[in-house]
Image (cartoon, rainbow, N blue to C red; front, side, top):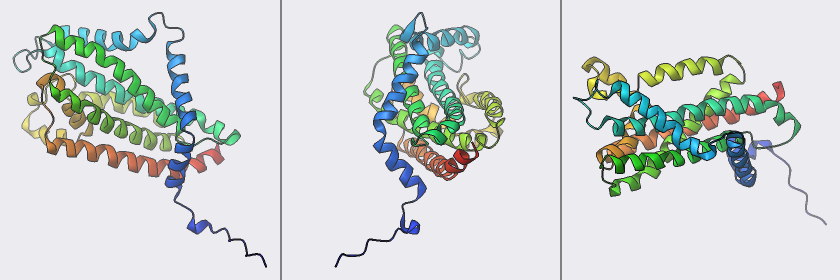
Length: 274
């Protein structure tokens, strides 16, 4: 006598967030193909090609340095080296979150046609941003050499800091995309938020110039902590403190977990509504 087949019980299935993560691992080759596509599309018609990822941030830094070096000369010596790391990490964060939102919202119709892990495009966008950030580190290191700043062992901490920033960007991008899938104007509104957010983050200016009344507000800004940690190995030649490392690790992991949970809960609904 044959043993009875096990009954399917949806209650015993893994949580949606777990199933999405498992599917993403199975489709890792697809994610890598998306990264390759993103890079090819970006540089296909560019005269400078991949060099633009290095020259673009360098030109922005040069312009801002000309404008603000005298303003912050007394509080921030070697201002270009102070500015460049913060500018790089902010650009990575802002571009990654914006593109994730656009990619997810634009891919909802595709979800109805073929099966792909819903988060594949968001993860591919984050990995693509990391490639651009890696390329942009080349002129930053050259700037350090040109200004006589030493290349210290503290630079070995940079990959861990970048991972925390990538987790934060991915999590926030998934969260914003979840809302933008229901309300189309959220993506445009978030661009305004990003612009305002940048001016409340010590990217261009040193946080020491903030009045005492705004210091508590600074501590509530997650990007302020990430940029401070990222800047330290380049500008100060030292590793962030254990407390700062713990803070940015918590920021990255918590934001990614919340964004992932929210996105996986709403992805199927978005696909049906699309």
